Image: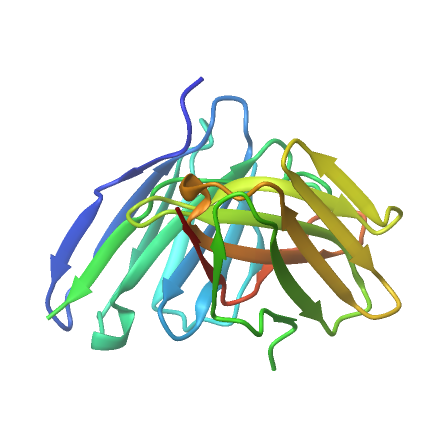
Length: 114
Length: 114
């Protein structure tokens, strides 16, 4: 059974550019969540999508946005990139996103801003 | 304000001995707790979880203990193996009828020495 797939694995951008990251959840999973991991802050929740609707949003600026498609695949977009956006971006999926269901993570996209 | 705290950034244990990783939380609404293991260049892997209606959950070499009155949980690994060397994250979630995001600790790096 295929796990959560994130593309690309690595990305280098410059300040002011924008970037789109992609996540394909485990087959049958309808909830997709995005997290940012930095050395100082650990894993910080960005947002969660379920059935193409954003259900939860973390405390990040509006430059961070996302969407989910009818096949549950999700994309995350960051506009006007800043140096501080350099991080590992992780996507996680779960069956229905219920409170007692574990989330399963992809290997992440490492974004570096120059 | 950190709601989930892992106060030990690192831990070294000899192979064959017990590893005990600790986690404290402040939010009394948390009722589902998880442990993830993370290797470099990979996403977090779900290990074990526990609901607040239990005080112990066991899966092979891994046991999670929950002390609700102390708002404390721990992960025991017995016996520890070199392949267990990784960063371990504690995570928690609030109870509700829908979905709330996982809140992560900053992780503890476990080194199992052969």
